[in-house]
Length: 466
Image (cartoon, rainbow, N blue to C red; front, side, top):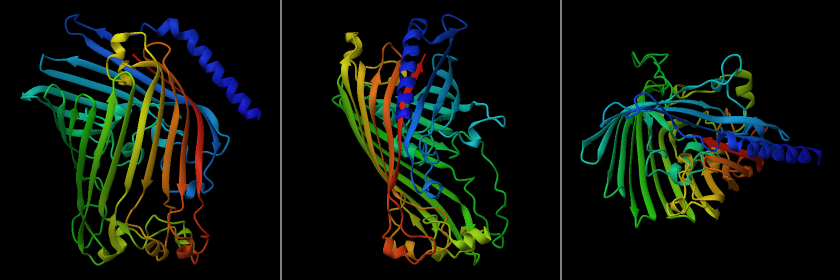
């Protein structure tokens, strides 16, 4: 009861401070530097939360998840700035545009790669690209570190879901692909921007530098496994019907270097994702959407040491569970993660600016919100490997982590007292369900049954862009 009262008092304090600061920042706009006729434009955004974890997953670190709050104990509370972007945009000529974006990104708890050695927040190069407009009719050429078509470009789900300050879209949440990659892309728009496509060929390393393999593939007698040189081809096509119904079809493909198994047999790992999305936009009122994905990864799981269970006594003692190159190709199989997401938001109180209301709801990061009070909600369902069966799980050794069916949902209010400033009380929940039949796994040492459990967090989120 005392913790709940403390949380309530802190929430009230944050709201009061925000209201007091509004006169100072309500007129903020993007900053223009240089030649008035062709200025360098500076903009940015920031979002974070005060979070209080009311319930913690009982399996804890043994669960194979990478989502926010996964390893935090019950009753954790604290503030975190999860994102801060600083954007620089410049038109070199009428047809050539340059963009550089520096970003601070962190999770809760903060990962080792997200902070400096002294634990201070750091920034990195998120985007750095040059766009050459109209290389042919309706199409721009983009070269450099750029947005990927998985969810972040025009026609993707992130601009329609809008609430990135609350949570990533499902493909981003489950780490299927990054929002950024270094490569060469094409972006096309036709029919008054109702039809579009994106194609990108990139390193498949996100914002990270491309690194070399630690063991070069110099002969069939040197087994190695690497994911460092596996470029990815991304692509999507989207269409808006009646300026209301938006449909997108996305796909990507990557092919890893050749590897050798324990018998020096050569094999290759590939990955392919297919994701359709449908959304309905009712301007000034609501947006609802659904997306589904299936990813197939060949030769991705080792049936001698798959990450599908709890750590075994052998793995603990030897501290060396078998890798892919210690198994035969016959023991390597495909994995198929799948996900389904429903999301939407509804304007409760409209903005007094009728010009804004007449536009489609959204573009939260562009300050185009259609109302000053909105409701948002989302539900995700995730299966880490649709190919994994009870029988396969029961026959494995050297287990590392528990794989579980997962569901995620969030809901909250978005209060926009003035343009570009959002205060969003919300609930964040990820729940886990036993994936395998306990009877199949009951003979395994230290394994009674997977426990159904969940992480639940109350949050007061904030967002500001200029």
